[in-house]
Image (cartoon, rainbow, N blue to C red; front, side):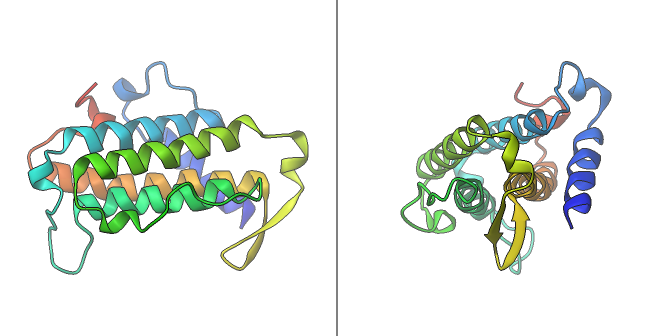
Length: 172
């Protein structure tokens, strides 16, 4: 499981276009910073009127995707240090773009604090995440992979709406 998450994070990080990759840091922290930036920019780029857009009724809307990334980032990234999410409610249920962007900012700020707190022992110290034992570092890597996964959904939605996602040079 640990190797799979690390390989996935590297594979996702290296799959960006050469133009988008210029100047990018492909370290573990660099990949987190990359996806954080793309998600944040995408959330700002999508018009509020499109936050309710769903390609089909069975999937999350733009707003729900951004809310889900906020929920998971706030929850996952605080696990290594034994903290709790900075979010007080379910960000998937937020009603405005401004509230959703604030939830993302709060969750990413908590994740930034976790990355700043990394110690060498985090590569061996174990914590429980969703019923599995993982190293503290692997928890942060899982969050990065998860954020990339859902950013992929955002990219598809943006393309359906004629927008160029940040990872392809849009909004940069």
